[in-house]
Image (cartoon, rainbow, N blue to C red; front, top):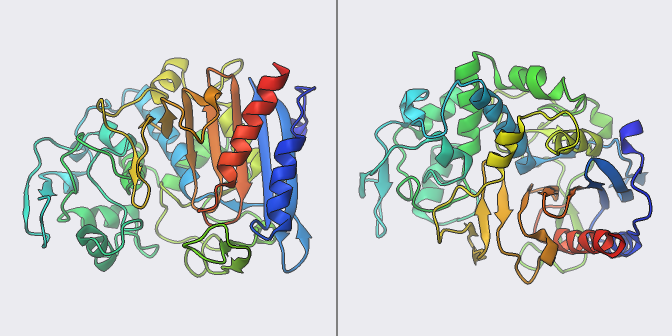
Length: 397
């Protein structure tokens, strides 16, 4: 794997490696792997710990991970390829392509039933979908709420159904806010995957293979593991409410029995892929200047521009509003670094997956990076590694 050779020499990442090794030794992580780029050159790559702790299989750079929501970057790129061809405009109403999403209704703030709603003041646009400002929800992060229960009861996220059938289920479900007025992490990227199918006339996986995975040489990325023996074991923390509690619990059937070992009807654009460190590195490198890019430079700049209204920040149940964090067309944006971010992270585009994977691109600092682990999110190891990576680059620059 020539692309995984360190060519940017002289950067010292020992502090970052030691911090992650400590988490593996404490049984907070089974394994940890990462890659850091300066421009397009690899400045650091590491693999620590185990692909399968119980079987004693060391983690290698060719191991396959469940990337969950890091799928969203690939789906967003797929949609933007069609945007570059003039197949749609960002402010086109989605109902032009997916009629089931026309005539949206919005839950009233005090609603106790789904019927307590009002007509949406504007249609959902493709820009809203790409920035998670559509008013759709996920049915994952806010248990007990009216919309969470509705998504669960209607089985919005159901591997036995197609993306087209998912649109039928969404047809009569209300939004949680008027499109373009707020932010909510949602199934919007799955809707984008369906948009790709409708416009291209291809099944989503076929489009990805012909336009992204094949051209970039991402041979181990797909909805089914190319080699099941290289699929890493998957773990959760010992206590979901206390991520610092030592210990791991193995989850063999996550997110559902048979996932990634055979093809299911649902090809989720928001969470369906598996990938490797080299494959994801190829994608990230293709979005950086200094060489051939997957998307046009103007499209990449647009992708990294905040799409949310002034004063609207991303937010999550249990964490509240994350001041200073906006959202572009393919991930969140650090507009103002928080106390947890490195100061040089200003302008960074990033996103993470439920299974402990994350990517980031920082144009102002001229670095990008990837983290691949197999622990359900909750522990702040990602924040620590990124701070130490920024510091390693800063010290030598």
